[in-house]
Image: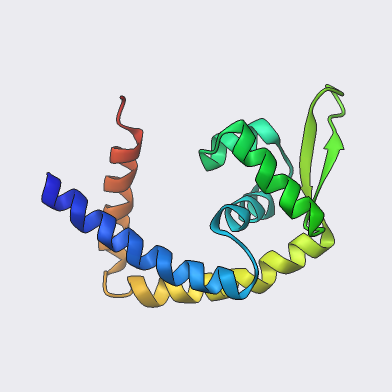
Length: 136
């Protein structure tokens, strides 16, 4: 099992390094990109929902949102049903940023993962999901 985990970690590190280079060229961190990507694909979410989706603590997600808000990529809007909550929305600038960065990330991941067939990629997804969902 240890040998498998080591190989998995090395593979993830290789992919992460390439993705982080693309993100750095676009002045984004991995956490910022993941948050923008989630909002782009899912629509607005509360801070709590984003933290849960991205596996980030409340304090960490607040910092990521603060930084993206300063850059004009997201905005906080009071909840319509519960005024104590804030929904995080992509701004037009944020939507443009993710549309600019996403094609490069997709191309990189496709290029890196094309050593596996579609079937192998699907099997890998299932295995990773099983590991990720394993009860503690």
